[in-house]
Length: 112
Image (cartoon, rainbow, N blue to C red):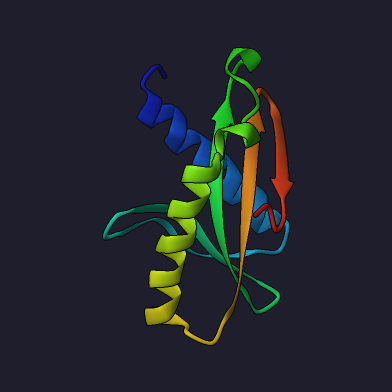
């Protein structure tokens, strides 16, 4: 496995399994919307959760969580607002990040 898209897809599979085992119900994976893509859209305790998955195999580029910078957060907020407005306008929403650093998987609830 060498391509970035293959690594990303594998990371999303790991994150999806991790979230399911943590009680999340996964509604959609790789939701494509005008302007971008949301890695995972889930429900946890009646909250609509938009999940960004980041993977870093080596620490030389920083942690996976640090890759979710201000620009990425703003884009995700905008995409999520568009999605929620159409699908669930009254839903409580939250943003989580699943960080894959080497072999360690960490869930950051309400990350931003």
